[in-house]
Length: 431
Image (cartoon, rainbow, N blue to C red; front, side):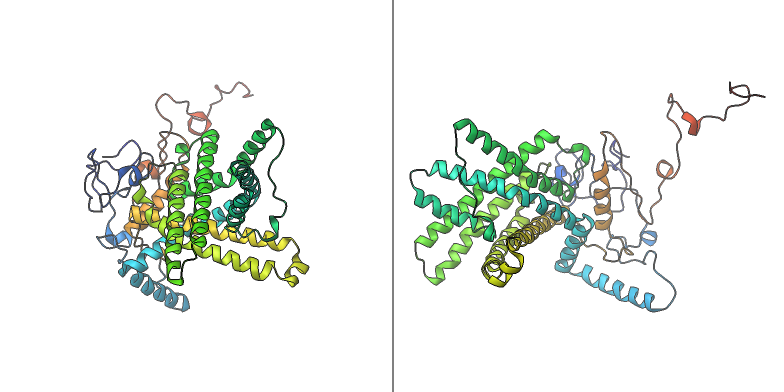
């Protein structure tokens, strides 16, 4: 039995063992939340017709250990290379660590995450300066009576991003209350471009169908909330660092400072992953990626400082590149940060939906391969009620996929389906 969304219902036969039932009676994969794994409009873990292991290139358990699909039977260097890759493929699927990492890398590649990260970095570059303007202005209003503390927090916060020689012209907004408020709103609105690009990337990672994504107003509001959360996290991280630095802790206590900064950064990643995805995710669904991302962010901060100190501050680099040295460094850093955030989001998806082991050659499709491919295809659902079908090697497309059913009952057949007009039906026929 098939659901209205094109997925097998609870009583449909499947080539995979059903998982424990959810509260509404639907089977889930490994007891996972149906809202994340088997949401309406997106194929869940148990999708498609039952596949015979002998024709699908996998064993009965769907581990992809059966005969290869599309492999060359002849000899030659190509066959030898295919054999080496098949051996490596079987080896990586046997071990959970290698299978998990391979699955994350495969999904990262299939989601075109590198291009998404480049887009986030591009918009991020043009969003940094309006956001810095808003940050410096708000900080100046809040700490107007303590300019020394304001300068310390501002300097520490700007050190979070490798701006180099690009921070010399950032000043507080001045003027009447209306002008200042309007300037802050304009700066925040301009700064939402990067958050919107990140939101689109995260929705692609979690395979949210296009029809289920919010309109431009809600996207802007969600992006604004993300910026407030991330900006607040940066300020909190800066405050924690300033407090710990003022205590003059011994060398052994630096581990405590690192752990405190890691905790703050992990909370920022948790909030960002929750706000950027148009799905009802739980905190545990994004915890692993947030923990890994917090460590990676601290390493990127150190890398940015090294770049600013050793390259941007170098006279030879400044003589050759001038102010472009800071631009190149900032763009590179933002691109690495975007790739880190998306990669850690892929870690969350693979862990929650159990999308491993995966085939690295495509000749031994596993059950996880089929689920991942159907989830990716479901992104292109553009109209409510529409169905997106994907037929993989070894599957019978069926009459609803392989044949044109013709016009629906009562529908105008049009020129493609209607009969050819005869001489008596054509008013322009000259006989």
